[in-house]
Amino acid sequence: MLYYMFNKPQGCVTARSDAVHRTVMDYFPAELAEKLHPVGRLDIDTRGLLILTDDGDLDFRIMQPAKHISKTYFFYAVGSVDEEKVQKLENGLKMAGMTAKKAEFTLIKEYRIRELESFIPRDRREKYMKNPEGKAFAASLTIHEGKKHEVKRMLKAVGCRIFYLRRDSIGGLSLDTSLKEGESRPLTAEELELLVSGI
Image (cartoon, rainbow, N blue to C red; front, side, top):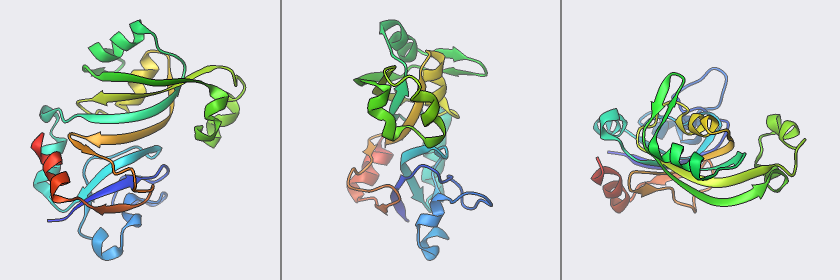
């Protein structure tokens, strides 16, 4: 069986093929790409940890909603959080069309928007930089479901807008920080054990 860790860049889609965008499979040699498939998906503008494998059983076990596998995301967002907002994020949120269950939130650092200009996508930079002294922050959020756009929607529900999002871990497995965006490598036996021990 094959198990790969991939540091997904922004701007490519989690799919085997796409008529418009570059896919995560385009970062692998053709003979390897034929065998692998991504476990779950990351949005086109989300980067970070993605597992690719030829093990259909592992894919099923990780993606089963009832398993509640934890996934931790690092992000930069425009806005600010206070104790009330943190409580809402951690206790679960009801939003239009979905309910987000309990999560763990960690505020890492507060910023002014101008300090994070280089992380703001070009299509939003002009808008956000109209208020360069506005509040922004870095934080992490650990969720246990992984519904579509869940992290972005949760922060939006408390008045914050994520503009940089990276998945750092799945279960007990963390992204290798020495892997540059677009790079991949096989999982070690220890890493595979970390991944499967929680499922």
